[in-house]
Image (tube, rainbow, N blue to C red; front, top):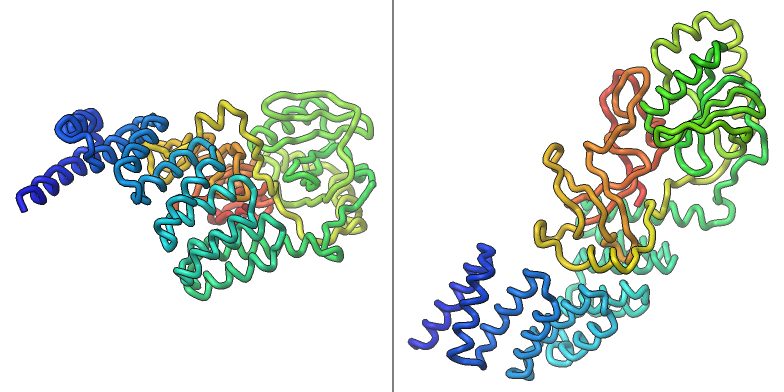
Length: 439
């Protein structure tokens, strides 16, 4: 009885030191226990957690292997080794340890999940689905795994099957906004992969000769056109520069059929290639109030606006247009994988590399996308403070969040993309409208 009390007291103290992040004290505490009894598996386990907290993963693995050496039926040690290998992107080796652990604990949901996650990281979605199915056999109402199943099916372009799993989540919890977003995303993907619903862009066709005018790129293949007053070029350049800076969108001032100026990232470039083709929209991005004064005295303005409207009407497009479905991501290089992989010790559960903005209290930075569909992709994440997209007329934000950018949602643990065409719903003088990100 006394030994049991001593053990409980020792373990309670180890837990306290770990929770208080007194890692050096924990390390010494474990070493003292191991000096008394080198076969103390609990001390080895806490020592492994010390190394894990210090991001010394190889040492943490060695401690867990010591636990398994002492207790050959310790499935937790095997699972811990697999998890630590997974954090180092050694997925195949990790799977081998999960398999050993599952032989000892075949009904352990957490191990099946980690094994499935490794397969998803390897883009072996069929095997990942098999793991998640096993979990659902044990816990058929587990929404987390219903969503994981849906994501893996979606990654295989089995969109309708994926939707069925998201529907199951919504049956269990109709208020699950994450499942609803995923369902809507896959419904859109079903549309654009159905031949009769593919986006058909008008073209090739020249943009209407309503010079001078501004073209703002909203997303790839979609442009907003703003007809400008016929004033001198110096004033037009000043208008275009201010509009591009305020909207924070790539913009082109078109002066003639073979003469234009591109504005991007604060730089300007003269060109003879004016924008053409694509989907044109107009009437949403307003000019400054000074431009409106010039417009009022321009006798040609209303004629040119009517010509633009007629040209847009005569070049219709069909289908469903999405934002950047890659979310601007790119394959992470070896240095980034090493730096951004593993747990975020400063903010547990948040992708490593993201930091909390002290002003808006949202996360920003660069990280690896946690979604299995974007495994290994480096993503840039913006907070509300990064949003510089403003209306040139009223000065209000064009969107609640930065356009053509990503944000991290702690509620569902995912990175969402805000397409540039969300600027089209801005209303001067009205309340700011919420975003409807495409992930």
